[in-house]
Length: 111
Image 1 (cartoon, rainbow, N blue to C red):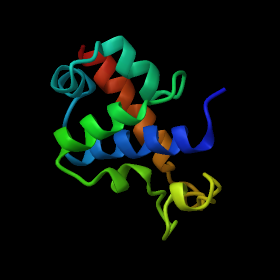
Image 2: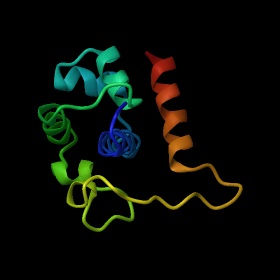
Image 3: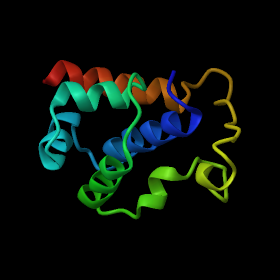
Image 4: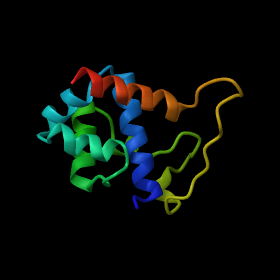
């Protein structure tokens, strides 16, 4: 099973892909990873390695800490042993996980 910290890193990467309007295919090519390998990491089936997170942060032109931080967590998951809480979306609105899942499905369909 993938750890909570790995899940939050995958979520942060998916969020950055949406923000930067970058596809998983493009990111995989930029970091020299196969699309299937990246996809397994983005859905949480396989944890990211530290060097992969560093390469992704470099390609996305953001500090590595941005990928380790959890929304609403001032210190980031790395500062509190991976323990964090995430507030649910307002009633009737899709949560960020649902929006990111849709984005991942779109990326997968586009590839």
